[in-house]
Image 1: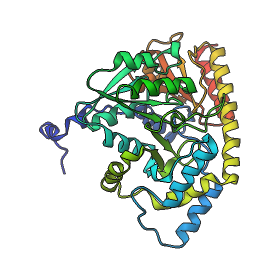
Image 2: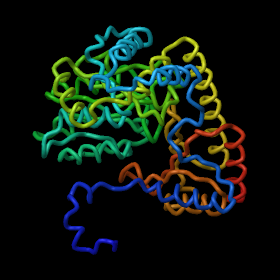
Image 3: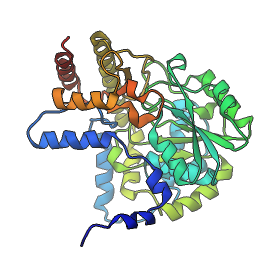
Image 4: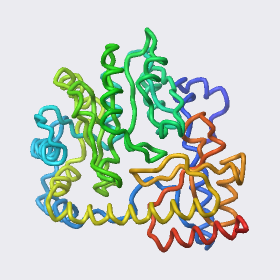
Amino acid sequence: MTAPTAPYLSAVSRRAQEIAPFHVMELMARAAALEATGHDIVHMEVGEPDFPTPAPVVEAARDFLASGHVHYTSALGLPRLREAIAGFYQEHYGIALPASRVVVTAGGSGALLLALGALVNPGDEWLVTDPGYPCNRHFIRTFEGQAKAIVVGPENRFQPTPEQVASHWTAHTRGALFGSPSNPTGTVLRGHELRGLTEAVESRGGTLILDEIYHGLTYGGCDESVLTYSQQACVVQSFSKYFNMTGWRLGWLIVPEAFIRPVEKLAQNLFIAPSTPAQHAALAAFLPETRAILEARRTEFRQRRDFLLGELLRLGFTIPAQPEGAFYIYADISAFSGDSFAFASRLLDEAGIAATPGLDFGNADPARYMRFAYTTNLERLAEGIARLEKMLGR
């Protein structure tokens, strides 16, 4: 079969053509090619924990699969898991949450798709941050909405303010999609900031969606959910990051009562149901023995952050905002290069280090920044720093 010629491209939808790829994927492919030829690569680009899934979770999946009865669950998720998630909110945040408002989803991405599918009409504007997680704007485009960027910078720890919401809001704006802890910066919205943003959005008749998938991986204080300040906000969460279950593709969405039925209909049509084995496995994610494992790993992540942050500063990088959560450091590389993609290529080719250029996260000074992920152990991070120091001639 011959490859399609150029006229066939006219059949590709505009949305598919307009959605940008992950530029880091090109670097990851090059890193894989180098590894295949025997090169050793220190991975600081990957946004997933390097730890294995906790043993109690794996054992729960194994026990369930042994029965052989692997069937669909409700589109909203396994009732026992929805109840366990609601119990987690009571225990962890002190928030009384009815299980009926919990929707189990096919990963955090599935939660974002369901929330936006229920809320976005063609032509609607939604506020997002720049820099920010790139799929947010792409998902909005998928539903024929328009992502409107709020440029966030070091002066506000790369987080939006109520004043920025007010100045960017128009007659076409329907809501805002923000993240805390943030990808790529690792910064966290504090309680008064969450309250201010909630009031700024809801007083204008809009809906606030908060991506909280890095909750649990915070290092300077307790997690604060936007649900403390509003029962009308939507919350996106995931078993991927804190719970170390990336490949299980399981997340959840908290919605107001009025959105339950619309989200259920979308879930029935888009996904049928989340993975049944993953849901039964996730029941063990909230066990005390699992939480003890996860808290020990959070301590290790904090040690990695402290090490990498100190070393990057020592080598001459600028860190404009202290990363307080997730597992990322957003570093200003302008002392070494004016082109983060070229610098990332140089890191890979000369030092055997894979890291993510700012180009993936928006248009606000992307050539100036790089995201370093501390999703590898301290020994490998130290090896990466040694190579980086040698490359820079320090």
